[in-house]
Image 1 (cartoon, rainbow, N blue to C red):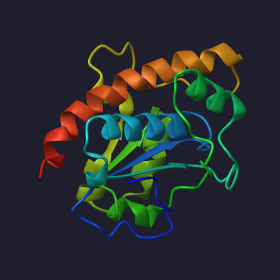
Image 2: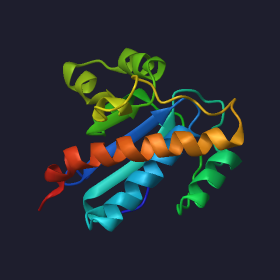
Image 3: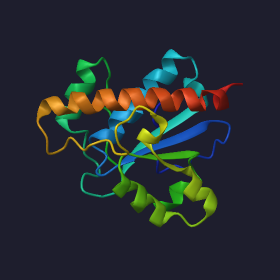
Image 4: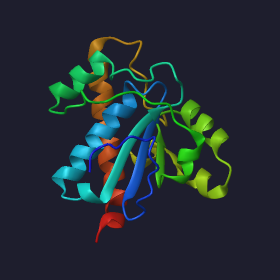
Length: 173
């Protein structure tokens, strides 16, 4: 499985294709992609998935994940050192089965790129998969203290776990 470069088209429709999209692709989206991939590996369905992450903005294209993101992931047993930030492109709405945003601003930006009802239907907020969430948005930890990255990671782990349970039936052979 592994995260493939988004620049290549996700042409393999036999796999379920997910892209996590945050603002700059250095905090929340690499966290979620990493957690999702590890969950798929543990459940034995990694070969049935293509997982990617991107940002709405171009601010950090080519950069690694924020050092605080990498530290929070590492502290929780994950590894995202190979991550490089990418900007989401409108044409990718045709390539993914599901495009996950972390807050309503990103959701609006993604919906503004969508041209068809099918593309619109692929865009979802991550916390929409978590009925216990206290609001619709995963907070951006970028301007927060280091410890808040761990808090955000735990929120993402919960919501990604619930997302995974909902789509797992689509990954059966």
